[in-house]
Image 1: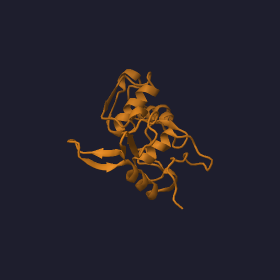
Image 2 (image 1 turned 45 degrees about the vertical axis):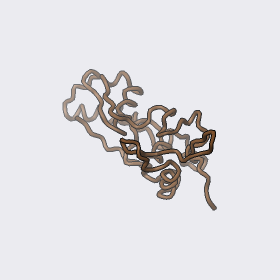
Image 3 (image 1 turned 60 degrees about the horizontal axis):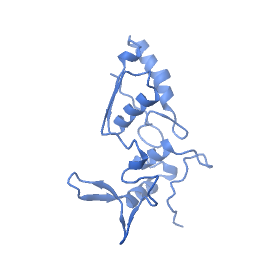
Image 4 (image 1 turned 120 degrees about the vertical axis):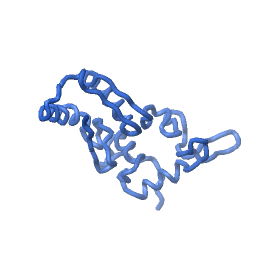
Length: 171
């Protein structure tokens, strides 16, 4: 078993994929790290002998590694992975929703939920959760969940950091 710690300036984890902002972690893990570990510790070194498993962010990574490197691993078990479809990015469909912070309806707008208890009680809403991260670190470097999602999936901005989140800045 190999557990990898791959911290970066955005989060304690790289999401194990190649990203313009985070770097070539996926390639480094599959082309450098795993072969070196298999060599040093007499691993079998064959795809049929490698499998992936993980939960939450680790679940997302297990699935991503299997998708991006299908011939490198024999299978993946992804338990409760982070969002894998941008139609369900937390409670936001980034393709259809016009606002990530509010749900618009025929009678007005209500704050979009960010976190609930298992019985449905609302614990947090999107806007304060995202703004909290913006306060914790500039350029997506809050070292929290929204920051890393933006870093992994966003192109590099003109200033060399991830593209802006689109959140209006206060003067």
